Amino acid sequence: MARRELSKSEEKLVNALSRRRERERQGLFIAEGVRVAEEFLAAGIDLQLALLAPSLEDTARGKHLARTLGRHDAVRHVSDHALERLAATESPQGVLLAGRIPRQQWPHAFASNAVVLVLDAVQDPGNFGTLARTAAAFGVAALIALEGTVDPWNPKAVRAAAGASFRIPILPAQPDRAFTFLREHGFRILAADAHGEELSVPAAGRNALIVGNEGAGLSAAARAAADAVVSVPTPGPVESLNVGTAAGILLYLLTRERAD
Amino acid sequence: MARRELSKSEEKLVNALSRRRERERQGLFIAEGVRVAEEFLAAGIDLQLALLAPSLEDTARGKHLARTLGRHDAVRHVSDHALERLAATESPQGVLLAGRIPRQQWPHAFASNAVVLVLDAVQDPGNFGTLARTAAAFGVAALIALEGTVDPWNPKAVRAAAGASFRIPILPAQPDRAFTFLREHGFRILAADAHGEELSVPAAGRNALIVGNEGAGLSAAARAAADAVVSVPTPGPVESLNVGTAAGILLYLLTRERAD
Image (cartoon, rainbow over all chains, first blue to last red):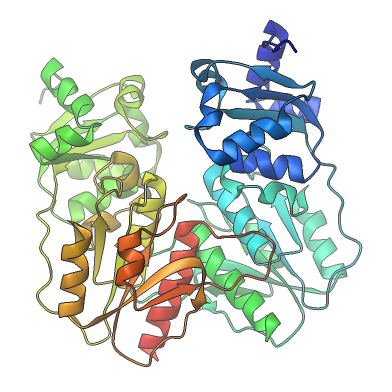
């Protein structure tokens, strides 16, 4: 069977999908790296194009992935050099997939002790990905990306999320809509800030945790909506934790209590 | 007073310092961004060269920094375009400093409840920086970077550390030397892994926490040295947390207990 090569128009598509506007217009995104590609396929994402390079065969997991994709119509073979030129992340590990952005549904019902994570203008794609990964690890029910937040389908965000992008509902929203929705569903709204009160975890109930922008912190809308502003108490001299680390500790505390 | 421009040899120096070997040979490193530059100066790091670009004046903090540096012999004025070309990080915010790597001393004495963080081949500079920042926030006594770990003075690591590089002793070491040192000083050695036991925090005592490589996890040497392998219990379906998030939660638990 002939190995198909990448056409000029396909190459153009991959390049175009590095831009948010094109991703939104076409409803497509890019996933790079072995682990993300594995989770992409496991989640049943609609595959449009799969670029494979020789270095994918360097690891057992890569070989397995190449075999899984083997005869798919979407597979194109490219050089490692070409793949690295097309990729948004530093080591694509010989694989880049283009797929359809999953249709996001706002949940209708939540567990009595559900936790939702709200991102209020988090701008770094690596931070977004880490937050999505942490949210999935702690069984968070949904991730709401408020206006001003980096595109959840940015290739670097998808890479850092390590597959969590496909495991948790990611809901872009205006602040008003998001906070109204959370109140209607009985969520207590907690906003994370370096200068809040120590988190006191309730025995039960639904909690939404808002984390703010890396530089500017919480927006006025988030502060106004919050029932409480909470912090991780730190004894050291540095003023604040990285947003991903702070959210990780707060989600740990919120979900651990829940399990007791 | 004439504004000095960057000479060819100075430009060459900045470029050379993007490589680990050159940093080690010359004992110099690069710091980029307003916050890191502020902490660099506050820590009294020996300043060799300060590149300032017009965009530094875009913020009040940047203006203040420019005034602080104003008459220093090391100041050179460059265009924003030139600074971005020379910088290792994405938005240098109009400032790049070159300075002498602080002389690292192994501590002679530790508090009875000291915590040390050990990095066992952590390779991503962003992860290194987040870990250093978290360690400083939780008052960790030292950060030991075992063989195979990214250079602590990599410009991206220094940027992500947000000044923590200058606030905490960072000690590169061979595993044997590090583990012998920790035992001699009465540390219990805990190794973090996705499949360990839930961390049970002792009421007192010194603890060293080892975190492993992003892909391969803990080395055999780290496993052999560990008194216990510990995890953050996660209820969700994702197999593991990002190394920075996992270490953040474990350091929170180790240092919180200490404060009680």
